[in-house]
Length: 323
Image (cartoon, rainbow, N blue to C red; front, side, top):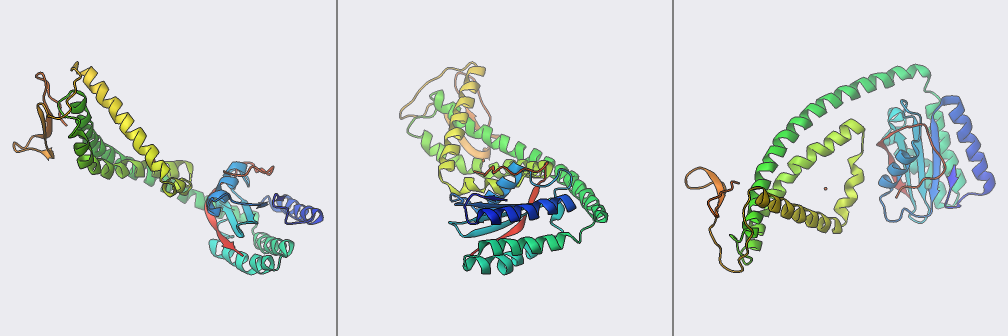
């Protein structure tokens, strides 16, 4: 029991700590209650999952941990449930506990009673779970492993074809930069060509990122929802574009040096610059040709609060609410 928001008295914290400690000794299931002043503008689901994973709530192999997170200023509540207990403390039950046991008392300012009622509902449910139920967990793990194998095969194949598709498009796109640095494509028309064909490149990126993210999620049980913050801040788009064009520039320069071509510059007129359709030209061959000197080129804050488990994981199960 960690009351960082100071919504409970010292005696209340001690009482809840004893309840949680005794319950863990009797059942091996670990329940952690954490109160914070603010989520610091993070979604409570993300904050709870980070806290759960950082402190490894529950036991390794059993994943039998539960986190009750309360944010005082945000007036938000989250019950985060480990993999091993998702069959008992379901999303539906978590939502009912929040709406029926916690919220009514919190609205009255009775924080201790709301927390205590929630813990009683949770412990009463889990006390009915015997050691024989471990067979259910083992069966669930077998299905989980089978799903991992199938997902790995699918993502690998999808990633291979997606990566090949991206390579072809990106090589074509890099050729535009090569022509610019060789002086074949003028400074005036270079931005036009970049903008004109950039959609082709960004269209293929998901075909590479999706299988990579799915493989990470499948093999390491990583909740890719944690990366959602990237899409919530436009600055990450600027960072990505900067890195992307810097990397493309470096690749283009390396290609020129590797092919022993000479660098050049043209401000207005294009020199020997030929750029046809993306895949085929009038002859049915490779679309883009950049000719010079006889050479040619074809063309994506957790709180560590003094409570730790032995390695439990959360699958993102649980429910959130507010008062």
